[in-house]
Image (cartoon, rainbow, N blue to C red; front, side, top):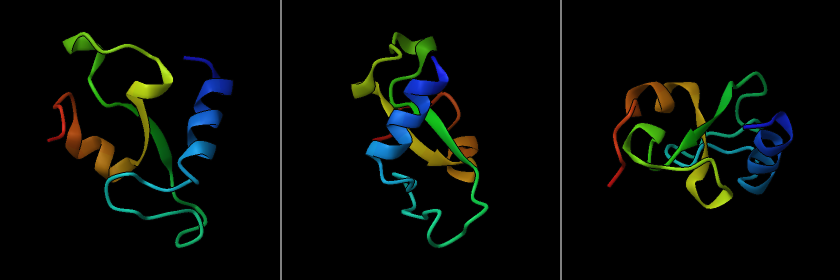
Length: 68
């Protein structure tokens, strides 16, 4: 995954966690990460439709699970 793709996903998601809705507007130093909705370990791809922006807390708690 390229840094350009990471930035594109964050921009698409309005720099907002897709799980808890915390954004950089709420917390300017928020660490946002790009998450595979379907993890690579479970056959997911690094394509735009399988990527989402999560804050670091939500991404760590999700791990390699598939959110329901």
